[in-house]
Amino acid sequence: PEDKLIWDVGHQCYTHKILTGRADGFENLRRADGMSGFPKRCESDCDSFDTGHSSTSISAGLGYVRSRDLLGKSYRVMSVIGDGALTGGMAYEAMKNVAELKKNFIIILNDNNMSISDNVGGMSRYLGNIRTAESYTELKMNVTNTLKKLPKIGEGMVNAIHRTKNGIKQFIIPGMLFENMGLTYLGPVDGHNVPQMVKLFQEALRVEGPVIVHVLTKKGKGYEPAMRHPAR
Image (cartoon, rainbow, N blue to C red; front, side):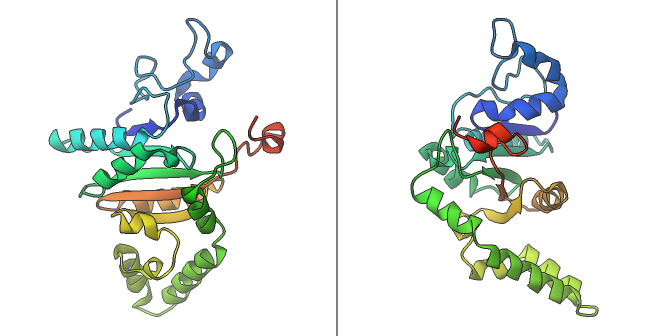
């Protein structure tokens, strides 16, 4: 409950509700006197923001970060936003203001190439280019692995690259839009690979300032009817 996990478009929070002691409540989901289909602070102290609309989570997270810093608290704030909700102008207004932060704030971009139906527009095409840029990820991993093999200096060079915004990623396209807005970009990462996710989140928590973690997921993964008809 201490750390603030803020969901965009409230129905993203179903798994969160299961993991925070409310699995039994799904029998009466969205019924009178039953469990809400959205995060509700009155329902659980693990829910930090009441929301049902899209594109609001980054603004809400920024509010929590400002409040945390003014009160001298040390809790962590993470806002989750989908690529569908990233089409909303409020998200961009929030990122513009987030770029001024000097303290850690994590934005998790859950990118499954879908909103309610297929995504359209410029941001969708931009994320699509990142999503398919396997050569970038392979190059980054190959360079990192090669540097680590250098005796005595290899690890230091890798750490220096991770710390500086003038690292390898500056010279290659993916994530540059966010970097140019003032956010540190990490990813893309396979959202169904837990060890990779843990490693990247640990790295994100060490960043001084705002960081966006680009997570690639597949809508309905593991449930065959949803994978066949994701828009339904």
